[in-house]
Length: 222
Image 1 (cartoon, rainbow, N blue to C red):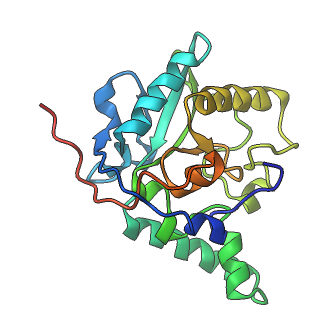
Image 2: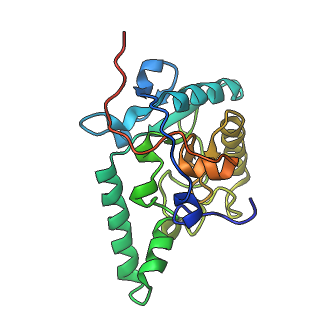
């Protein structure tokens, strides 16, 4: 898509959810993904994803060039935490732009934090991740993960021009593997990928989303 559709776009919220009931699972039980603890919470909800999303991550990892691995950072995010992130960033932007309308603030916030009512993370459908080498060392993808547009001067956008060739190559490698496995990227955040949520449905041309906001109880293991 030539123009970036933001999470705040009414077209995203207009996608109906037909909840499939697929459970959340702990990605650490798969055993083959590197899991970074930087976003770990007391209840370990950060490591939860819908089962179908995890399956696609494993497919993507298998498609990576030899010596590279996915580095998982955050999956499920409780709605209360999503609201906290949204309001915190909105407060920062209001402080810096006192003349902006509420609608402009909401649009600007959604470049970096999804509106809570449609957030892919709260559906267990989204994952924040990057690439690592065989020894678990994080590769250069142009910015730190979760760098906002102001901090990074726009370099957090997936197709940003002002990044090194090494970072661009690494982004292409990550994107190719994940897109081939069926996930879609949020173009303002190179690290954010999802499957089955409303944003995925819009970009993938689907009439409905598979996953809506869900409780954080993982599936029981037999």
